[in-house]
Length: 196
Image (cartoon, rainbow, N blue to C red; front, side, top):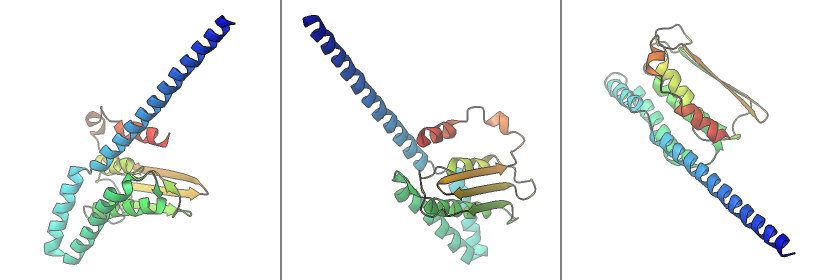
């Protein structure tokens, strides 16, 4: 009887230790994902910000109304990143608004308005999604895309069917893309962990 009681006691002690370890491991994983998301929110690409501000500066002299429009877009992006991106999920409609602001600011740099093709279909307004989940793909399309190719040089599609979201993005990559991107991949692994 004593042997059975001591074995059961040992097993319950081991299972409690194992359970506590699992809980701590899950908390650590959640904290790591939270930290990665905070880094993602904080990393407005400095080149994007620098180029956007320079473009707005040139528009102030030539087309002041377009400069004001661009400042409104930049303000909308900053507001979204400060307030909404810290939430666990946001309506897909808000995320698409943020994507539109980003694309509108990028379009300033392109002479062909059809170079960027962004299409959305389905009832997407209130479907919850993790904030900034599409942005690493979109930013990479602009960062590594070849602006000298014919339109549409960047094509983005979001199709919503019931509760399923289909996201597709295509672009022409620059000739020297492989040489400069040997250490890439942080964004994709981060997105996989957030979706899991």
